[in-house]
Image 1 (cartoon, one colour):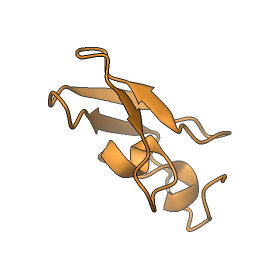
Image 2 (tube, rainbow, N blue to C red):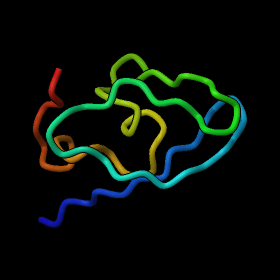
Image 3 (tube, rainbow, N blue to C red):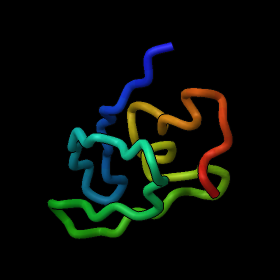
Length: 69
């Protein structure tokens, strides 16, 4: 199974989109939108900002593992 490391995060506040490389050794719980400076937090039930706001879920979830909570 090929793990995808690029995900496009969309800010729910202003709609700004940016492609980011996901970390493979840690979960990213917070992300600052570069346009409006809103701090995004993972939504309840999601393990990280990529699972909440990204086009691709984080590497552990892609591998059917629990996220690193």
